[in-house]
Image (cartoon, rainbow, N blue to C red; front, side, top):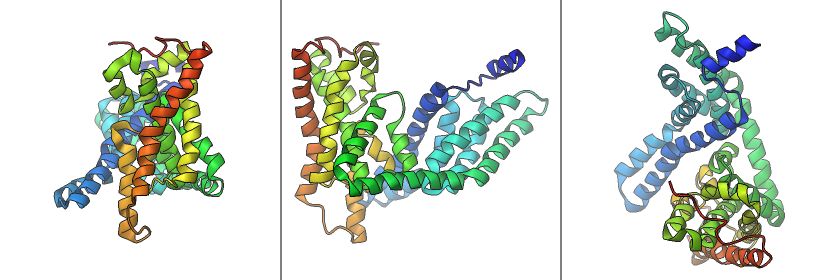
Length: 354
């Protein structure tokens, strides 16, 4: 047992929830962002502005999401170069065979293939052949065997959530908004979770609401401590910056969470806000305004397909209110109550300076 532990340590193979559930999942979201998400944004802008080259470039970026995710995962779990490069093939196979649930298939299969590749890396005199052979063989074989059922399972779960949200928009609006918002602030990837489950429609709209409640909420209630820099870094960056402060005083999280519980059902029941763009956008909130661009691209696609007559002023009102106005108003009001009862104090949300 001690020899196995020594081998795993020498190979930098760390079987842990942190490495796979935080490091790998977070990196996968970045890979998605740098391929599928950017590609979607470029294609949407290209179609709206009549710039064909943007549509073409966006299509290439979109098509490389599988390899981008796998390489990002490999980088996060510290793969040697030969393993890292071989994951290009693994990502393409897992994402392609996983269908709409491809991101989840890529996450699982890329991790297994990468660790197998790391295990044999530089163990033989023909490493140039052995390492990529093992990594690609294990990854593609697994993709053929398990990517389709993983994809189907992920999509089934996503469809169940979306169907439940259609049937119970109030309760599921609260649940989805709160849970995805919490995931966004924790060191896991809400974007990757939404992408893996294919979370769109009303459920996607609730997810956007939850993420915005966390980001805009924290940005506004901590403005006194962090100024404009904190407003921008949290409001269009990430609310994860508050994680260390949440650990010190978990009660600072109450206001953003309650805000998401309020804005989620308003998004689903009153505004009927839907995310019909890419599922990964559902978990991005106001990060680079990707959530809002995703909702807009969904409107454009719906109009083009004929399922929506036009983009209305009520659509824009709902998006602006849910994304920006309500979190900026509701969260400070709740936080004011928390301050009065002594649960939150000045300085509790001060961001550390690098």
